Image (cartoon, rainbow, N blue to C red; front, side, top):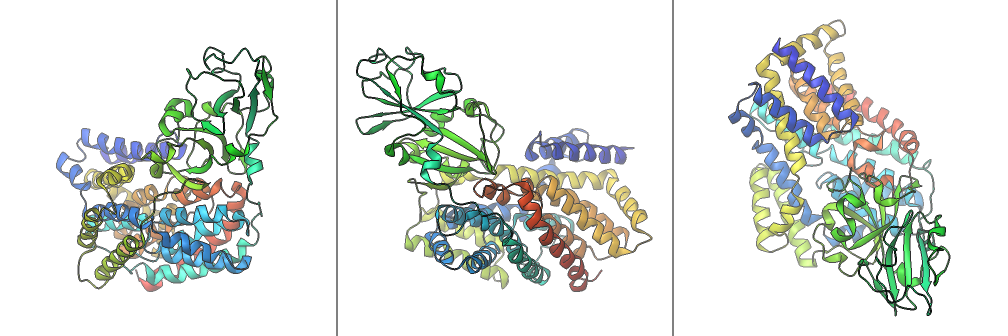
Length: 575
């Protein structure tokens, strides 16, 4: 009876994940806690899962990547790659993205190229960003450290067997799969829409500007006293006074004759300003001074903003900036911006104050697209030291000279000692959500085993595929993982399907390794829908894409990728 109850709880859990109403970290932690309270796992077992050595290696790798993503080498490389003919530039960008993603975090690679691709005017960013995102996935499947899903699978594999997967064990299948899929991707890239980069004049259409005349009765009174705080669909963003900007505007700020008041929001509600005497409208354009104060960013998957509105988080105080426009995919969002729940991947156009760059939580919340603000970068010596140290760790681990965890720990100590990384930065960027998901998923797998649900699942899979053979069961595990990664997230898909694949292999008396690799490759097979993979969300709005653009480009890539995985995996790793 308990085994069936566990399976029912997993079905409910999956429905909650697909609905998107609960964050994956909350759902995984909640179910693991439920299993603890009902006695399916004990406290010692639960805590042991959160200290899994492979999980600790993944967390260390992500933290070390914080230094690598600030290397100026990536910015220099992006400029060189985009100086070719369109087809060649696309191929070079895809190749570089794939190679770098084999060793660096996919998100860091896409973030490094995202700003350069969006700012350049030579090639339409919409022709480059989907290929960049897909290429980062394809490069990631070739090594153990290439993508977090491989390390998630390694965590489960270590827990089940006491052994870890090799650094380049994935490459035996992953490399030919990546090459075949990259070829298909390059062919389909030519069919992507060609949206020109947005210029400053387009961005200034977000604003209304009005000048305070010399005889205006508003002069000498505060913003709040004049009733400029609660307008219908508009809010006061900045004041231009004597060649300088006041931003954000405090409620007690006194207006002076000649002030230029800059408003944003629903610019079609200009009539809201006509009731103020002595306020002369300029039309829908702000000044050149304001244009120098604009920064465009993408909301990061690590951000605390998704699901919240600008008003809820008090955005102005939090970042010393005002949001003047939000774009989601190809469309600009209209209405009262402060009441729109934000999503990962949203493009925000912000007018920032001089204090904006001083906020320490910018890297966690945003990926910079354009603007005068630039993220801090490593010096040349620091960059060479960080990259050389990382290459040394990967090389030593590959040759078996030192375990990967030990090497990353030594590298982390060196980065902290040389102040390339700081403890504050590690605390701000620590991937708590991923840690909770994987640790909880390991505990859930243990509950499946303890309750007998895993054995029940194995018998069901055996009956389902008994007439079709072990290859059909292997393909079923792959397809199940692919469907989950398209509808939930890649790491959640890997965590949910590993116990299924392991139990199925045991039921058929087959070697579990090809089934486990099917989970790893399937969890990275997110090519159809932008909402299941973080790098797709990063490029969705900057590229002005529609979901149809991902489907038209991703379907041939997904078919080629899946066919290659299903053919090559059992050939290289026999059942």
